[in-house]
Image (cartoon, rainbow, N blue to C red; front, side):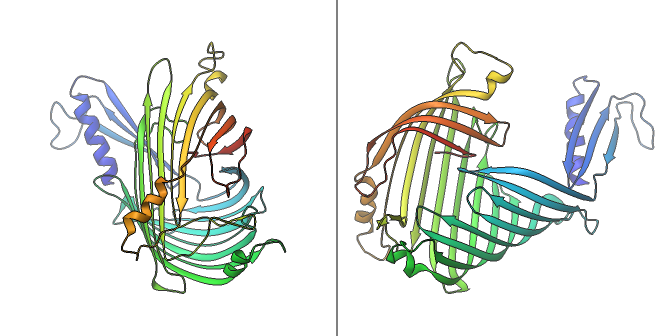
Length: 383
C-alpha cells in the first residue's frame, strides 16, 4: 500500500490551500483504485485533529480471467493477436498471459509470459517469457524461426527506466528462394545465442505516436557469447528524439538513431540481397502542421497532419581490433545518403499512424535500391 499512501500524502498537501477534495485514480493488474481525500471537519478516530483528513480507498477488482482479440500495427506490417490473461495468480499482483499473433507478411508467433512485482513495489517488475516466432525477410531472401526465453528485471532509476535482461534464442535460418545469394546461404542453419542486455529509457513525450512536446532517450548494450552459445558479439544501440512546439500548431521533431555491432561479418548488398552492415546511423528533421484552414478542428481534423521531412544516414563495416579505429568511423561520414519530401499522415488513436509521402532521394550509393515518388507506410515509430 506504500504507493497509495504516497499519493494520498501528496493530495493532503494540495488540500492545505483550501481545495475541497482530490481524487487519484490508479489501475494495475486488472484492478482499479480510486483514492479520495476529503476535506477536514468530519474526521473521526483516535488522534485526529481539527485539520484531519478522511482518505477513502475505493477498490474495484478486475476480472481474474480474460481473453482478447485485437490487431497490432508494427512498422509496415499489421498483425492479428489472440490472447488470454490470468491476473493476480498467487495473490501478489502476478500476471500470466498467452498470446498468438499472425502478421500480414507471413510472420507468426506466440509467447507465454509471467510477471510479478519485486519487493512489493509495482514499479519494479520481474518478467519471464518463453516464445517462438517466424518471419520471412523478402529483401534479404531468408526465413527465420526463433525459439527462446528471456528473464527481465525492470526498475526505475534516478534518470529513467532501467532494464536488465538475459536472453537465450535458438535461431534457424533458411533460404527463401533458390535465388538466395551465397552470403545468405552461408548464414543458414542453426545457431544458439545467449546474451546479457541492459536498456535505459527516459521518455517525457506527451504521446508516442505524434508527440508535440518532450524527448526520448533510449540506450541499450548487448553482450552475447559470454554466457554460452555459439554466437558472440557486442552490440550498442541509441535513439534520441526531441519534440518542440514552434508556432501556429507547428511541431518540430528531431531524431537520431545509431547502432554498432562487433564481431559479425556481413555485407551491404550481394546479388540483389540486402545483408545490412555492422554500423549505421540515421537522423531526421520533421515538421508537422494541421491541415490547411483547419477543417474539423477539435474533431476529426485533429487526426490529420501535414508533414515535411529531411532524412540522412549511412552504414559500413568496421573492425574494432584495428588500431586505426577512428579512421574507420570516418567511413560513416563519407558518401552520406539523404532525401527529403512532404506528405500527410493519419493518426490512429495512440496506437499507430498511416503516412502518404512524396519522397525525393538526393544522394545514394550504387548498391542502394532507390524508390522515389509516392510512398505509403504504416507503423508506430518512423525516422
